[in-house]
Image 1 (tube, helix red, strand yellow):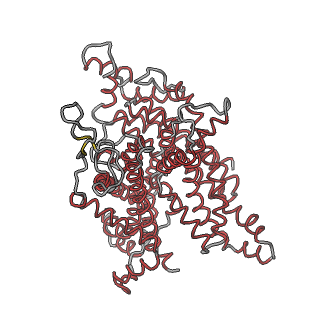
Image 2: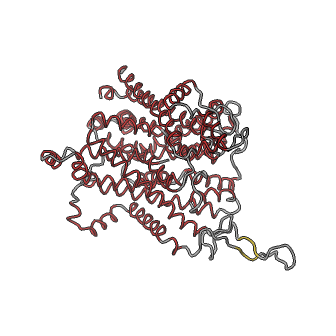
Image 3: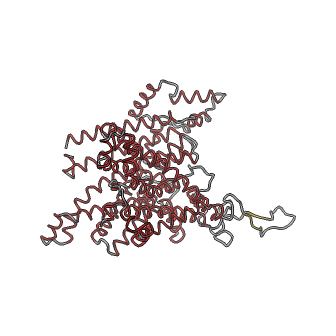
Length: 319
Length: 320
């Protein structure tokens, strides 16, 4: 269930360098074609947009603070006794005041879902950036130089891949006190092998192209060849990796938070799912809010990524 | 064939050495000695924190020269000595042995369920390509890929308890050979949830493989000989489509192990996954390290077996 390791059959991404379709249709026409051809992908894109909006505008979308504890009048209150005037508004179901109900500390579930989007997307974005920067570097060097360097780097990648992703993250938790930055780096490290494999196979093709050969013939250095002449050719695979990877990273982060091994401070969906599980038989609102948020996010990113891959892969576009 | 197997075995030994080295570097390269501090806070025989840290560093062998540390680390591993737990002070290996059986059983059940469900569904989906049946089956597969298995597990627990008034025997785990009925009751939910999640991946892969094979010339020949659909699909197409699927099943075992860490914790199965999560909770570094080493080397071996089986089934591989 975890990370981009499942993309076994997908290393065949060849870069569509010159987007002819863009020239013919323009960007708006291209968007129209995407919507017509990929209804599920469009749904995914919609979810991705909505989540990005939630993450960006969290303070304005949620009228409550995610950590605020809410109280309601205590019906058992009698003046002069020890019974308090107000009691915690905890474990309530959906209401007009709290759209998704409240959790065991009387915090607003809707606010926590919205702020959770910022945390999930932030961590996933950081992780993917880490994976893409290092994955592109390793994949490009490995695919460009080939020979013993490629052999050496790929054996190291095999070794990382021998570890189940979850166990690498558990090792990280046991070795350090993870904060959001180290957590992102850990998640990025896990996603690294898949990214570099896709980039590497794209570089294999790109380095044989005539314009690269021409550049080599006029005496460009290796660095310039890689950075200026080859890297633009692998732009499409990078976009695809980006959209496909986010879903699985969000899932991995949610799983860690669910196990109680991720930082607790910004609210997280996985944590809501875990906490809500304890009292779901009385009030499932917290459990459902957290679980549905994870599901929607992962599904949205997967659908959008799948559709984008089909759309950008030139071999499929020709059919 | 022999040469191929020897080459694979040698390569896998290299990978196992790299795995051990990576885990070895893990503790030495992290700044801050967090694990050491954690252990030192439990040492009660000495007076100051510095002394406690020195004791723990000595126990872990961190005060010796780095090459000597590496040598004894590797030697200990092959002797089956994975160090002692920070918390219980017991050898990690002894505790692991009791925990292995439920995890292996769960993984086997999951792969079994995954194959039993995904192979017929994948065939159906490929043979009836682009019909409504194909669309529905593919949608279910995509859906299962996106839904987190632990959420499905919780929902199942919730609705089974609410409507069927049944919940698995979560507090009282029984060994399969002692009490198979109770054991299977505890296993059924995580096995189905995890199995279907893996099955969705296998189904999608089998479908695309089968679609490719169905367009081959020899399949067209089989059709034009006048064979029935069943014979063409089962005898001619499926055999070749299943071979790559086998490799994917091998690769998926890592995903299965990852997923089961969460599922075992959720369903309270006393397997390796629940054990390692608990250890990570308590910052019990040697236990986490031991489980990681055991599972990673185990997976390397299983993948080796899959590779050999692959070469045995598909003669083209040997000369590749």
